[in-house]
Image (cartoon, rainbow, N blue to C red; front, side):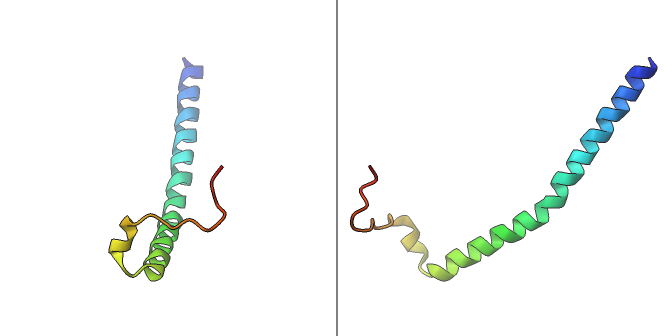
Length: 63
């Protein structure tokens, strides 16, 4: 019984540690995503141009 309790609390501690690690990385990821979106907006001020496919450079055949 003691081993079960110790094992349970060990797993619970590990789980809480992992959750804490993931949550600590969320704010930098959100900031990076916002930076990417802002850069994309600056490069493409016309939102309707998002629907157009990118033109291929000469010589790029993809195969």
